[in-house]
Image (tube, rainbow, N blue to C red; front, side):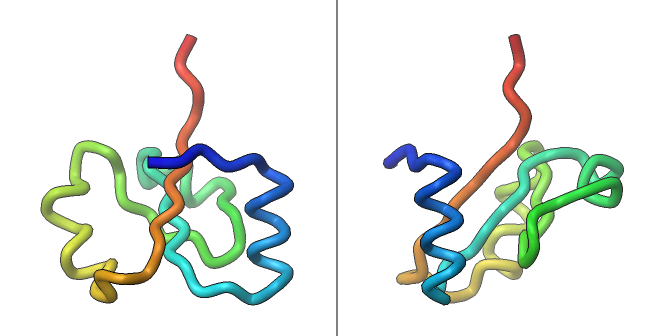
Amino acid sequence: MNIISKQDLKAMMDRGEKFYLVEALAPEAYQRAHLPGAINIPWDQAAQLAPQLLPEKNRPVITYCSKFT
């Protein structure tokens, strides 16, 4: 696992790189706002949803969620 910055993500998006962008928040949060192209896979449903929503096994996956403090 690697951690990337917001700037790195934006640069990847600007270059048109192929990757999955996964928002791991609840569907309600995804409906309120999400990054362009993001797929909603709530963290507690990842095992069930990821195989069908992320079919290309070699494509990088970038996951984001809120920070709990």
